[in-house]
Amino acid sequence: MTIPIMDIYIWFAAAVAISFGLTPLVRFFALRYKIVDVPTGERKIHTEPIPLLGGVAVYISFAAVTLAACFTGHIIGAITWSMIIGVLVAGGVLVIGGAIDDAKNLPAKIQILFPLAAALIVVLCGVNVSKLTNPLGGMLLLAAPLAGLVVFPYVMATSYATKLFDGLDGLVSGVTAIGAILICSLALTTKYFQPDVAVLAAIAAGAFVGFLPWNFHPAKIFLGEGGSLFAGFILGVLSVISGAKIAVVLMVLGIAITDAIWVIVRRVFWEKRSFASGDRKHLHFRLIDAGFSQRQAVLILWFISAAFGAIALLLQSAGKVVIFAILAIITFAIGWAAIIKRKK
Image 1 (spheres, rainbow, N blue to C red):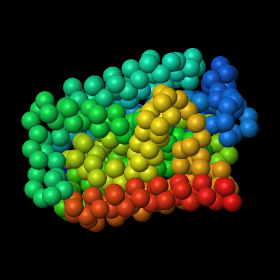
Image 2: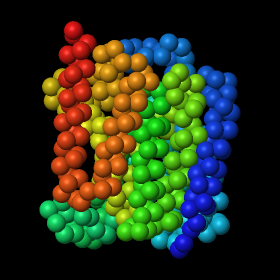
Image 3: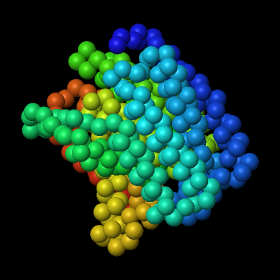
């Protein structure tokens, strides 16, 4: 399959336009039915109720443009209809479940059912990997059952990484757009040339870029539960569909993943409480408490995500392991530096 580069820009622009135009309508609906994030508790840094459900606009734009690209022959090829249907159905489950949670504030044991179902759906619809690059050299071949056992927790992890990271205006929207753009760029290189993957990644990037002007500080609408889960979900799925370009996504989401691991370990093993309980000890909150503005903190985290994601495009497997370790160290260093600055 050969797709002109201009076509990729067109699909990207279509997703941007639909997402940008649809977001204020979704915002009006959220305000009309009072589906808003009320600033109560220490974790809320906004000062007035902000509409939720932003993920609905992102998902609808992604789904509409993806279907249009499929029916015009710009995606279906290495990516099968089964995969596309699985991704769209699973994404719909996340967004609908998230919308219900935004409106009803569901308990954690109910919330987790939607991402569990979404991850299971994409695995059953053929979003799997047959081989993984061994950091020590060579390839790891995966049989069908084992492949599903790898993809299922991986998609769950990327989904929850962005969910837990969604604490500042525009942070997750921007990081997701960066990750999708990097996957699109990699899919267009001579070595990996996958134009269908490039189109799908460009559409995902466009959906979040179109939403971003409404979501950047001061945000007029938030992604909501479904949107923040869908962000990590689509990055995880794109990296699998593209032939296990998992390292790029792990680099882009490296700060989010490292921060999530640190927060979960601290809450469960040190503080002896549920990992789902909230606090202001995420890295992005520490930057705010250290005196950075929301825009400054978001731009810093965007830059790090983009830089390490771009580096991942240039390195072999062993180098990527080293760089990810460096990224984890940088994450902890930024956190400690923010704590020290706040105390001073």
